[in-house]
Length: 119
View 1 (cartoon, rainbow, N blue to C red):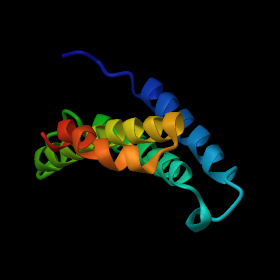
View 2: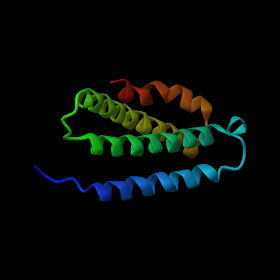
View 3: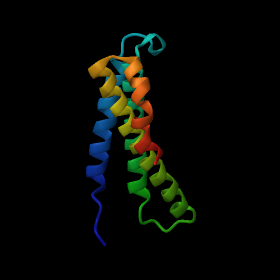
View 4: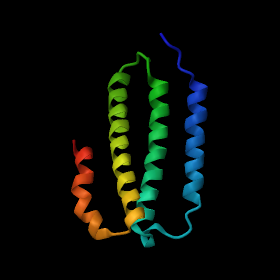
């Protein structure tokens, strides 16, 4: 069985969470007054924090033979998979909005952008 380097996982995910929290703390104005791109960016930061936490928990639980861990691992891995898809979709919408700043265009191509996420 291959050994998992737990300290490396803690360092990588801990650093990611710390940097993402610094980004969150640097947001100056209230989010409800923010523009669409700011809201999407904030959402992606929160999603990344969730993914880092869940991934760390999954690595800690992996290989343990305790009742219920297998089911919980499956649920957490499904959440990671879904978060990945949502993040990719959010990044596509964010990038399109930052490049073109056109809500009409975004509404028109939104179904095509959402198609891979829906599958």
